[in-house]
Image 1 (cartoon, rainbow, N blue to C red):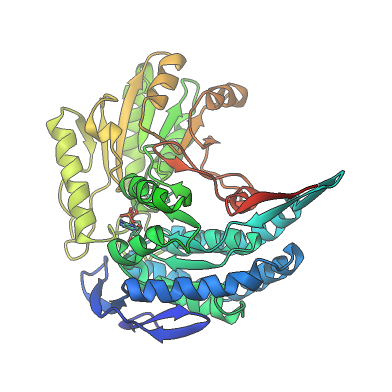
Image 2 (cartoon, helix red, strand yellow):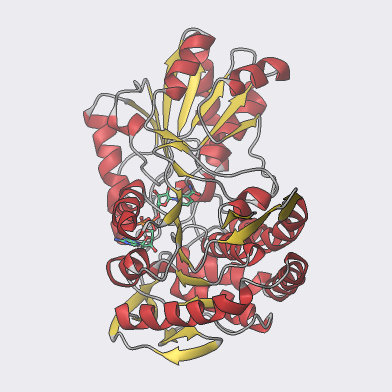
Length: 475
Ligand code: NAD
């Protein structure tokens, strides 16, 4: 299927693509060229209610399927989506401007989430029995999945895999900025032949379709990936119907560079983590903590390494940094770069405006500030673009304090030659994950945040646990 000039006018409800009741139409703009590449008709509360009703009807039988039966479905989902990796990657590059070197592994991580959930099913104690008491792990009910735009197919696959493993039926509201990518994925999932009503999708705005999912009493659980502000509103508004919530929110992740680090490896690794997904990654290591005694060496190494991070066409495998997703996101990044300069940080690389020759799309200059203090806006707020703040420290203890002095606690990294020491520092960081020396992933390890980075965990058995609750029969 070609992803150029797509017109998306339907939702996916009860196993079929059905016409939208909502009639607002949204333009889809290529971040690379600024040109119109498609349109999506946005659903409304009526579409959301139809999808919720389909999921509710399907829950009656799907919730009673066996874990083994659902494991077989997860294998089918894996195979169906795996057959479309190239198409999904192409859609992510085209609609979102994700660089192909990052987009493909992201899509593959989503595909593998189905296998991790299949394995997770075997790790969960579904039933227990003692004396006359039996305990079963039950699916929580209809789940609303609400996702962000920056790694669309991964979020959807992760949440769907966990929900299906648990025995929940779902209504997905993807980011309105991921309509094309979502359609490619939904067509792939359709081929897996899930029972009707288990998986439903309504494209639409957060304030209409998202809000209906959050308020509707027939939705038991919201699994959300997005900003902290919307996450908080979901928790608040969901309280009225006692929603269970999983919130995967933002980050301002520290990378702690220890004084024994070898800079020829450490700096490329730190910059890869900082500019992950063109900086539009919740886990991006956007605060680099360096020993003050090595600051001048670090500055030199950054200046020398930066030319290797090519900005440009995201479809080119040599490109490391693509455009921002939208004009709005471009302007947001610009305003933070201005703020950093105003607050007195030293601009080492980059700055305001488009890189030369890339004026048409939403490209920004990858930017590194040094002499940043941890109270500056660029050290505290999530920018969601390729902007790195380098902060100096004097002792390991101070490095740990700076790393932990953040409203967020999603991800961190420690880079150093002595691995045991790096692990000791890692154990003191208040974040859901810490990587040693390089960005790493493990589909079985929990993913999620401390503090304002969210609530609950995803991935493998941890993800499934977020969609089940215990029920006891006794006496
Ligand atoms: P966002 O919060 O603006 O939107 C996320 C989703 O919420 C979208 O589908 C949107 O339509 C919907 N939404 C908006 N208002 C809503 C409402 N009132 N009720 C219900 N739904 C509503 O976030 P975004 O700009 O799409 O994504 C970027 C953010 O996501 C960043 O903060 C980033 O750190 C975070 N993120 C977190 C993770 C993680 O795993 N922790 C992963 C990726 C992105």
